[in-house]
Image (cartoon, rainbow, N blue to C red; front, top):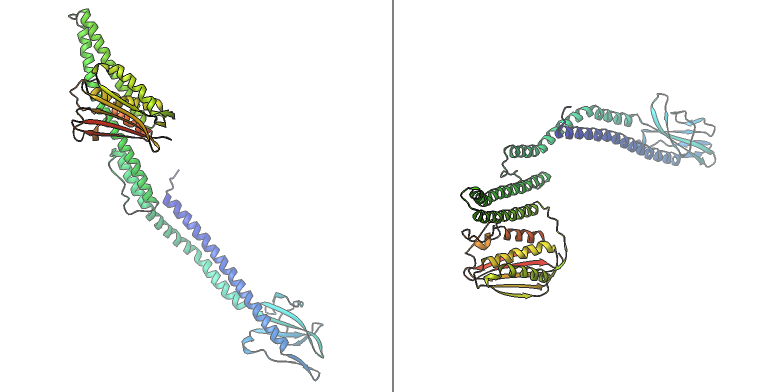
Length: 445
């Protein structure tokens, strides 16, 4: 099947519309001309009959008729007796008398005439009929000639409208064609940095270009995140996988005794658990990036969540002898308790992990206006200048040389959970002094 372009369809629609418009115009013109002519005829006949009745008298046994004025010479006026006999004038139509009615008839030359009859009384004589008639030939001839001329021009006007419609449609579709070509180039070359120019366009095509550019921006962002994600994963897994392979080969060596093998298997298990945790966290981040992490929203209290998290952290890191201060007030909000618990746990583990032996940690929950707030602060080394800007980046670690069991995903997950709740998670730091994380979440979700 031959493809019909939008330009062709628009041209055909425009041509059909113009053809119908021309035909309708021709019909309305002819009808309006006929109505105007008929109104003119009636006015002239009414005036002629009125003058004829005024100019008729009976004196000395004779009927006297005055001539019509020159302005009415195109109207023929005749007078008839009650029995239909001609009194004055001549017979211009053989139609029966219909007083007070406008009728159409043909005269003896087969010319179309418009007629008005009236009956009136003449003192001393009696009733007579007056008939005024006017030829419709001139008006009909002019109307017919104009209508025929318009009808003759219809094919030419239709062709002109088709050509004009084609030119206008093609010009209107030219930006769409450019958008299509650019989009095809982008798709063919996978260059997501290209954009469709939409400057100075405020029409629908400008909106279309804006929507496509927005889509390309999101695709580019997703592609870059996926590329970075893949690179980070391969980089972060390379070391533990290499370590597991090395320890596995050492455990399989004949020179390794049973005690050493047991120790190596324990280390392999630890590394495997680290990789399992990393993969689990990566899957959670991937689901959040794709918007596929359904939040189970319900009423909760940051105070209760923070108390439970702190209890777990104290058991896990109790040997660090840290001074922990907790100021927990009720901080009610609508949230996903499981995810918020993970967020607070990640922040708490980060604080316990990076606070030096004998250091101090302070945790606080409270309500402020229509928001619930959780704050955790650890005093010690703090962050270097600028690190608070990248602290939430994936796989970012303050000190990569330290083997503290972290994989650089905890704070990224915390930030993703906060974003999913429409909450705010901010980091403040002063080098050599403190690091403070503040979670602010709306009470009503």
